[in-house]
Length: 319
Image (cartoon, rainbow, N blue to C red; front, side, top):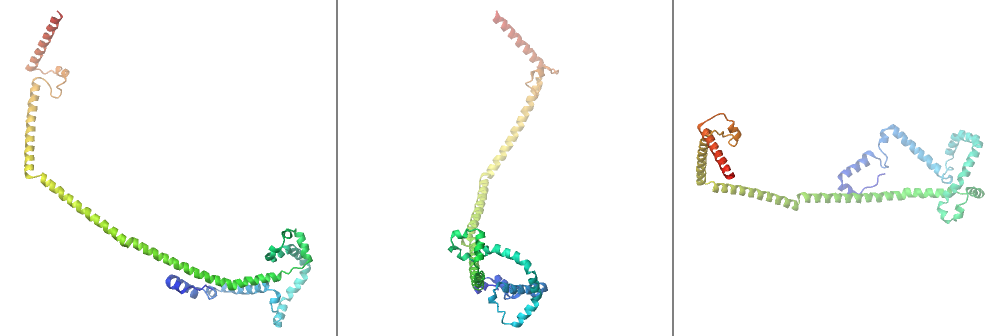
């Protein structure tokens, strides 16, 4: 059966409560078996065979003094009549089975004795435990060993634990599981509270308000800077300044026009001397020029005169 559950746990966990009620009412029987056995014939047949096998195992595990076979003579007679062919066959095959069965029992008797006396093994000397198997067989053959009472005692203890201690342990385990679930619910609740405080608490709201305040202050400073920029521009670009700049621009335009005129007159004068304005420093190019003019002749004569003066001066200095 399912272990009982604390009502407080069911009240604090609605989903677990629905699951527990569904298991106990719709899916499982009071003995923890499933309802599916009633709906499926194959599972139902297997379930019935399991009960039969459990009964047979119980009779096989129990000793002969625990079975009350003399209480009902009619059942014993029916059992003998049903088992008569098997008993006759067993007796007919008994001579063939005696020798292998005897060898198997004699080879396993020492081990069975050690298993049966495992609780008293601490009282035996170490020399006796280390005897060869052949000597153990001889001692066993001399003295009969009673295995059934000790095995029955152990089986009885195991069944007592299964019937008394296991349900109590399951109950304690259910209570512990309830405490664990309650602790888990408390931890989850505390986690939700901490998350709510971290996201929507006073500290989070204060941080958000501070950020919004700083953003507003930044926008105000930006507006003030824009106003200051406009004030500076208005202070610098007064009507008088704009008029002065306009007059200065007109003056620069007039000066540029006069310079252009002087440039044109200078180029004309250079052309009169036979100098190209695009290559005024190129003397070889000027000498190769074919065009002639009065200023060119005067320049050539002046150059010849200068050379003659230099020649006379050099001869005078040499003399």
